Amino acid sequence: VLADWLSQVLEGAKPLEFDEKRLLRSGLIGLCFGPVTCAYYEFSDSILDPFIIANRPIKILMDQTIYAASKYTAFVFMREVIGGAAPEEAFGLAKKSTWPLLKRGWRFWPAVHSITYSVIPPRHRVLWVNCADLVWVTILSLFAKEEENKAAALLAEGKEQPSS
Image (cartoon, rainbow, N blue to C red; front, side, top):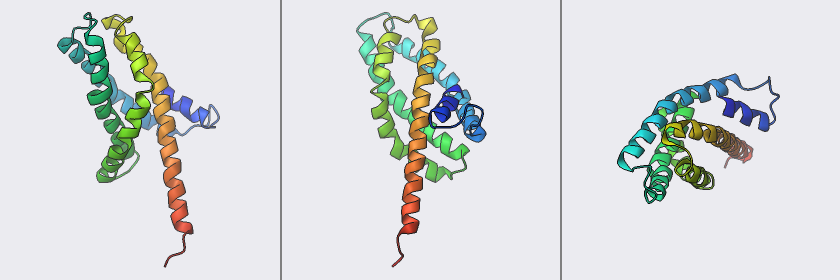
């Protein structure tokens, strides 16, 4: 919720004049992802011992492929469905958005997870990742707004085209 509010302010909204529906949508999605993130880190640590240095790159690779693609797809799908889109439309947009989100994530998360798996004790990883997630969700929210603006521009362009 804080990340979405921050992204709205960065987009030009006044601090107390923000889109409440968008903020609630982000909050609902965050409530769903919290337990999933905890479970993922427990699972990851159970199959790849976090104290073995050679496992760190494998954990980062697993985070930034299987887990990230699943999470980004779910994020976009949920955001769209909660926003009123039909499930088929939401899934299509989620599929279309996952690759660009993964590429954006690869600029951010490998550096974060280098710290996650080398400096942060396992019991504090979720807290650390949640703090980093504040930055990342702000990036995701800005990305979502950028996609909305592109779609609106395409729609407006289509209306301006003379019909044949």
